Every structure is written in C-alpha cells, then in structure tokens.
Image (tube, rainbow over all chains, first blue to last red; front, side, top):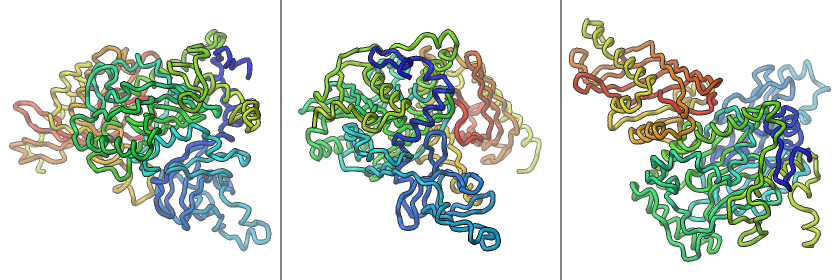
Amino acid sequence: MHTMIDAERGIISREIFVSPHCYREELEKLFTRAWLFIGHESQIPDPGDFFVSRMGEESVILCRDAQGAVHVFLNSCRHRGMKVCRYEQGNTSLFVCPYHSWSYTTDGRLQGVPLYRALYEGTLNREEWSLIEVPKLALYHGTVWASWDPQAPDFLDYMGDAREHLDHVVDCRDGRPGGAEVIGVHKWVFPSNWKFAAENFLGDTYHNPSHRSVDMIGMGPSGQRGASSRRDNEYAGGQRFWVGFPQGHGLTGALMPADTDYVSTYLHHPIVDEYFRHCFHERKRRLGEKARILPLVGTFFPNASYHGRQPRGICVWHPHGPTETEGWRFFLVDADAPAEVKDVLRRYYMRYSGPAGMTEQDDMENWLYATAASKGTIARRYPLNYQMSMGAYQTNDPIPGDVSLQITDQTPRNYYRVYRSYLESAPWDVLIGCPSMRAAAE
Amino acid sequence: MMRSLAWYQLREEIEDFLYLEADLLDQRRFKDWLDLLAEDLIYFMPMRRNVKFGQHAERENTKQGEGISWFDEDKWTLGKRVEQILTGVHYAEEPLSRVTHMVSNVRLLDVRPSVEDAQEVTAGCRFLVYQNRIEYENFTFVGRRTDELRRVGTSWQIARREIILEQNVLLAKNLSIFF
C-alpha cells in the first residue's frame, strides 16, 4: 500500500480507484472501523420510526425504539440472513422477517420465533440472537453516526477540530445548535469510484472551470451570472482557506473580516433575504469570533461530504463496487424557518444538486470518465498527480488544522495518508492523529 | 366521455402534439420545445419510495410543492437548463447525448369545457426514453406522464407535466435530458 500512496511526494496510484482488491480491502479495513454518517434524528422523530440507511455496502436500520432510544442495526435476520426491512422509512412496532417470520422489537431484541416451543425450546436463547447492533453510536446536533469497531475513539475525538465545521453545517443558520431537518434524500448510482466524489469535496475548487456553464447562465440563489453567482458572492472579501485534519477530514471555507456585514442573497425573495439577514446578525451575536467562518464544502473521513450553506446538505458516497458509487444526498433546512424560506431553498437545492442538478451533473461526468480512463493496463502504470501547493500550509493558523491559504492538494494528500493507514490496519492513535506530535504536546 | 367523432379527432390532435413535442427534443430543437411550455408551467418528477401495502397513495411518491423531488420546476428553470446546454461547455451534455422519446398509451383523461370546444385537456401517456452517451453509456427511462394541455390558437401548450419514473434509486448517473 505504501508504494501506491506516496502522500509525501504527492503521487497516488490509479489502482486505488479501480482495483477490486483495493476495494475489498476498503470494505474490510476501512468501512468496518471509521465513523460513518447514518442519518438525521428529524427522520425518526417518534418511537417506532425507522429509516433504512447504509454503512459501506451494507444495509442498516436507523430506528427509534418504543422508549425513544436511537439504534442502528444490520438489516439482516439472524436466522437465514433475509433483510428484515425492505421499506425505506416508516413506523413499526416490529421488524418481521418475510422469510420465516422471526420478529424483532424496535430495540433489536428477537421476540417472535414461530413454533418456538416445539422446535427450539431448550436450545435457542433468544437473548443471544438480537439484531446485530453497531457497538458505537453517536448523536450530534441532530446527526447520527456509527462505527462497527468497539475500539473506535469517541465520535468527538474522531472529529477533532473538524467538529466546529460540522456545527456550521448542521446547526441553525442563526447559530443555535442542531435544529435542522432533512427535507428529502436523493439516491442514485453512478459508475465512478467513491473516492473521486469524496475527494472532490475536500476542497477541490481547482475544478471550478468544469462548472463554467452554470456561471454563464446564472442559476444561483438570485439567478445572477458571473464567477461567484452560484452562491451570490457571499464569500467575497473573506480569506479563503483549505484545511486538513489529522483524522483525514478536509474542507474549504472562508474567514470573513471581523467587521464584515451581511451580503444580500435571494434577491427576488425579500422574505428569504430578510431571514438570512436576521440569521447573520443573530449568529454573529451568538458565536462571536467563530461566526467569521463561512463553510463551503468538505468531507468528513471517509465518505460524508457536505455543502455548508448554499445548497445545504450532507452527501454520503457509498461504495457500490470498485468502480461504482451510490450517492445519498440529505438536504437540510432549519426546521423552524418560515415556509417561504423552505420553499425557495428546496427549489434552489434541486436545480443545483444531484443527478438532476445543473452544477453537479458536470461532476458526475468528471468522476465517471476519470474512473473509466484509469482502468486500462497502461493507464494503471501511471500514477495521478497530487503535487499542488506542496508544503504551502501552516498548522493552527489562523484556525485549527493544517491550513493553506491557496488552493491545495494538501487536503487530499492528508486524506490518502490516513486512508493508507486504515488499509495497513494501523492502531487508532495513528488513525486519528500523529502520535509523535501528541507525545510532544504532552 | 362519450366516444364521439369529435372525441377521436381530439385524441388524434393530442397524440400528434405529443409526438411533435417528442420530436423537437430528439432533434435537439430545445428552444422550439420551450415555446410549447406555458409561462406558468409546473414540471414535476417525484422520487418513488418503497412503502408498505396500503400506504402507496399517501407515501409512495414525493409531493409537488414540498420537500425534495427529482424535478419540481417552473419554466424559468427549464429555460436555464436549455441555456446551459447551449453554452457548449455543460459537460454532462457536451458532447450531446443521443435521445429517443417513445410516447404511447395516450389517453384523454379530462377535457374542459367540452370535447367539442376543448380548451384544456388532461392527457395520460407512457414514455420510454432511450439515452445513449459518448460511447458506451446507455440509459433507459420508463414511466408514465400526466400532462395538462392548454389550447393556444391552433396548437397546444403544456401547463403541467407530472413524470412518474419507475425507479426508486435512480439507475442513471444524471437526469440531463428532458422528459
């Protein structure tokens, strides 16, 4: 693996984007350990509510039990393996397996076993055959995350300093913690390796020319044309930064001047503009100095990417084969935003994002043909180049993390360094940070 | 509705209109196609969910006017989509896909105010859209459409189009074509 990923020199083999062997290794060694995004509590507000999600290639059930506790279960019967839930979302008191009718309560316990007395009495201990539950689960400001590794560090240690950026995505626009709701989930498959998508969101703003067509036509919040029109130019005047974290997360955003004022947006919709103006000032009041950070995009290692503001959401790039990805995009709005605000936002989200989105269609085209053209015998002999802005970063200045003030491959170099550590089965202290740096700090 | 001669003539007129419309798209005459859309157009393609028996009417399809669907747009947005293709640098449609729209099972579901003086028609149909892209990309979209058509002079305009695609997880990388 260390010959395939030379993060120090910025050279990465194409094999990791096409090889069935690498893919198998990822499923075995990465997706069984890393914290993965599962869903949002707004999708399961009431006891008995469930939403079927995914971890790696596998189906899992996110569910709120009769007592209100949240669980994540592998969606597979303990008897013969049949999926116990083939609905996407709903409310139930039992998950009944269609095959032999073993049934499980919403807290995962095996309850019903047909003909138990006659066939299993004295042999089957129902307590031991509950649905398989994730050993590590975290609820954070409405979001739900899980890991299959009992030894995994706590979620907040796994997020490290990237946590503050997660806040900027999932908290209310006025700075109150949490308070978002999911208004829909796009699901689609496309023939690309999942890492091309995850890596794109680490802060690859170098690819902006591929979105030139949307800037030419003007389809942003206010429908204006020009290079910054996609997001109504709200980052103008700010110091753009690209930042990577020891746990592999990476993102880009802007640090706005302390005296920065609200930039009007959604100009054809005064109610929406007024809402964001109110949120801007309220957020500044609540968060103080931290309100200077405006999020743009990022990826929480390994496959949970986000758009922090416009259009706001979390997109999970599920592995679906060595050269196939299933994208799930969860769209977020403030739950208590006025109805007109929600309506204008959802319309903007749809025209921007996903397979029908005018911007992201071009991304899918890039990722597909980057994958397709890397499959060949000759292509695989030539690695990909990640040498942009080599060494041009500083640590914890002006914000925590390895910070670059110019477009950089430092975040993907860092991401693939951490990725390599997972595939080498490194211990957790290596996976979430540099042990020598930690020792020095202590 | 009584199957009068006027009814058969109207159905043929509507069929002709839908075939003409499909042909404009397949010939990539996108601007001409836009002219067939009413200014107050609603163009809607829901996402389809796997739901329990008995919940289909209420929960199977996402709803027009709420939350997220594949498309829930107006004429302005569709105009932008056309404009984007015509920039020549919208790489998801550059080079252009090859597309054929098959339209069949055309039915008159409602005619207002009367068959003899049809000003508004609700027409149902099935579609099979074949998209071939670059070299090896093939996508087949199959489903149902319900169109609200409005008479304008000697022709018709589309005032509302609901597109029911028979897929749950979208099995195409993009929806970069029109339905």
